[in-house]
Image 1 (tube, rainbow, N blue to C red):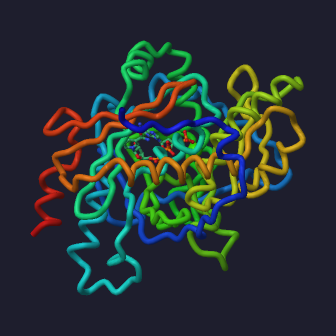
Image 2 (spheres, helix red, strand yellow):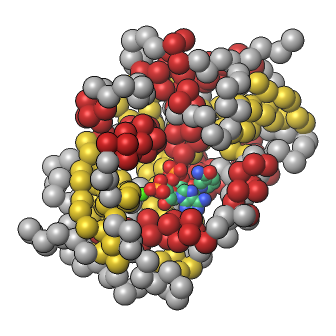
Length: 362
Ligand code: 0WD
Ligand code: CA
């Protein structure tokens, strides 16, 4: 029978594997109509609240009348990232920035890798990852599970509002220009995005992935990307031990994995009260999160996450053998089970677009 991959924690609880310092190789922007631009026009700038003042951000403000939501029925697959790759491919003769000619084993979204990293500690939601080997590179693109689709379509309004509040927090904390001020009277449009493109290496696997970045902290003048990037989060105020445990066990795991991958060093959390007002801020340094949680019982270990990711990428390399843009190896995982896969040719799962395939094979 076909090989499978176990996700059991103890299998991956060994030494921390080699993860080469992630390097930014480019960026791109998506505008208010989700149009692609090969530049940093959507980058935002971090503006902390005035010295000594505690924040007082009204996050539900504008939910009803100043909110333009991205259409999440549109499946974009890897398209924006592929467009970025092509723009480098085409411009490569004038462009002598390093590494772009380098072959990479894997191309994907950062968010997909985050899901893979946290798999050994996930007990609620499974995932589906479509993998195509094309011209020597493995492309990984997530497929929405039936369960996730149902959940999205049935999403109650309070959860939708919660998502809005996360974006609203960004608006309170960021300016559009380096010398600008935040504009909380503006519209929240979730089509807009600034994405960094990162090259990294995990043991034998070279990775090229892209992730959305919230803002740049200009007080780190000497640094370069990704070291000046900041990830913004909101969370409910913590009152009890149990609430603190849940924050550490579930949210910090996801936040750590998401920011560790691209090397985003700081996560700034706005804690909101029951009315959705942010009343305090706390900074977590990504590389110190493990020290924060390690004395608590039954938590999680970065080493398990990263070793599992390495094992999954090796599993892909073992299983995906046919180099063909029309083939998809569909990897699926459900909680308490092993990762397994099925193979599909010319199916609904094919995701590399013709415009990409044609340009690369030209
Ligand atoms: O499944 C995905 N993650 C896909 C994401 C599939 C296809 C495209 N994308 C796009 C997203 O729309 C976004 O523009 O890629 C970009 C982000 O990718 P990522 O950085 O790899 O995703 P992730 O790390 O999961 O999310 C980063 C941020 C989120 O911030 P929080 O603080 O909530 O983690 O990207 C935003 C969100 O702000 N985001 C989205 N925005 C609009 N629509 C979406 C989405 N579906 N998913 C994440
Ligand atoms: Ca964020």
